[in-house]
Length: 271
Image (cartoon, rainbow, N blue to C red; front, side, top):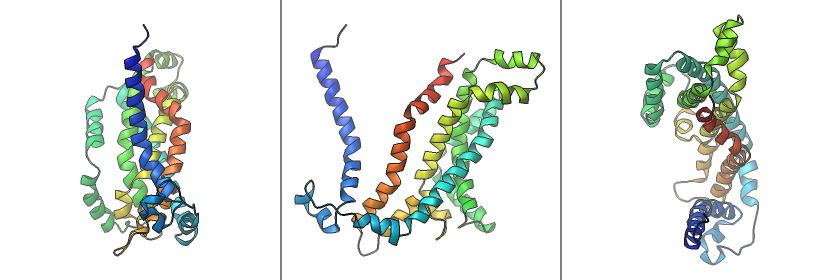
């Protein structure tokens, strides 16, 4: 049956409202990044203004944001790789050997707010003389993204048929060999999903980097606040810096969205 005209109109209007509410702040941010501070405060130039790239010049050259971009890439990449190396085998063990109590602990670690762990981490890492280095940032991001990787991969491994591994064991492979040659290649979509979400979390993380990073190890979300002073705020530079942080992740999400969706749903459809 075709939907009624009133329902179709309501659906279009509801979709338009949701999309506009999500895109309006982003579009305002991008537009403000091409304005001077005077134009940003002038409501008459909200839509019609003379664009300038001075804010991006300030961000990329004067504020040394190229270094901060490299810091964010390195921390996000290293934390994601470490989370996958530890989380994928852990999720496989919990799934195949029915370690439900351990899975419950992982789920609790995923639910606990990260801010509640920040003070103990700072105390421990400061005593170890690690605060301000890349190591503490990578570890802190890994500790939070690791439960996410385990949670995603457990559902994926639960959906894979165990008969394939049993056949491999009959052929003489060990459990590790069956995991490496059979299960791991089949779980690539789930690993890609977990890796992408872990990378996005690390790239966007602000609180851990604010407390645990140093002057030379700041990531992009922390570096944005260089434009916020006690007496004034450089809104043009702030919006340009926020655009530099936001657009790469949005582009990544746009190009890999189908892989993320397929990875999240594959565990429920396989088997």
